[in-house]
Image (cartoon, rainbow, N blue to C red):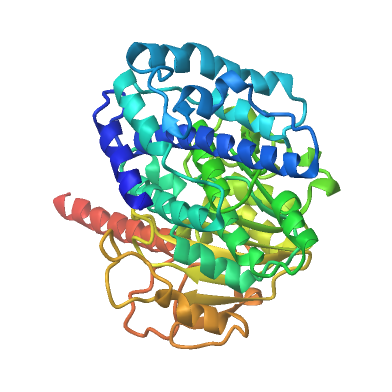
Length: 481
């Protein structure tokens, strides 16, 4: 049922000149879904308070509640006399509703409240719809969605994930918000999070890691107290950009997290020296964005290892955020393993943490085609040996053939005991070059593989060729006299 509603919502958004891509569809429908969710949440809380004989203090003023202005009802039927449309509706949303919701951020002191999150969400986005008639059609469709039951939320969360995955293939910056869910689930399964552990993603995007962690952990909860702990004290995220912030927030809500602990902030703006033990976490799950010189110069000064690569700054941040014994699963470009600019960071990682496993992923796991690896490490003791697993598939990945759960079955099976196989092997850190700590993936079991040379080997070969060419040129000049 809901899949048809979602389709009609997108069909209506397509008609509006303010929405030109999947990114716009997801963004605009997300804030509308959020308002409908808030109205259903208010109704549930009102009913519960009435049953308990308590007075309920509403989150949203009555005149700004979805059921009052978006789709007003009379005896369960749409009240056409009170229903705004066209320019009247557009003016109400842009000039009255949005300013009211944005004011929550300044009136609330704690970022943990749902009121503060409402203010953050609507301070960071714009209403892009240009037609109040399209808006009316979208509101009427969204009003058919229900958030009260777990069955409804499960169906909507699955559909929302499909929309996010489409957004990841839509060009612009969509890909940075989506990590394939089979990969996330496999990372969580092998890291085995437990009830009570603080789980953190400082570059959470659409909150895929946090949503999947919640889905994994909710099955482990045995008591109401454990479920409350999972809801309020375990899952934490940060996101710099407004669009993924609202998408991530909505995604967590649809997966069952009532008040997501996601902050709209630049994680890298925090000086590492200011991170306190009380902020330390048990588990980091992340796929940080990459990009050279995408942060201002003063941001780079927050890190002990100076670099222009965003992903490297995030990796150092994650190492600092882990408590002793804390563990991490981090997706990063495979060039981290050999890049000369990352040598100091590799040395820090191997000295401060036990990098016990590296998963080498094939091309096009991510639609952008970037080659990546996953680093698995534990903070508090140096690395002695690292187990590598190379995911070799008998097909080319792409939109019509994405990564699936079965692809990673052998990796999950071998991970626990770090078993060597045709696709896996172990590297002794004592055998690494102490100057570069080069960790380039070289599968010793693939004899006919063209092994990539290290930067040091390439530089040495170039020097030899330059010397040889100089000698040849000297001989030619002698002959020419």
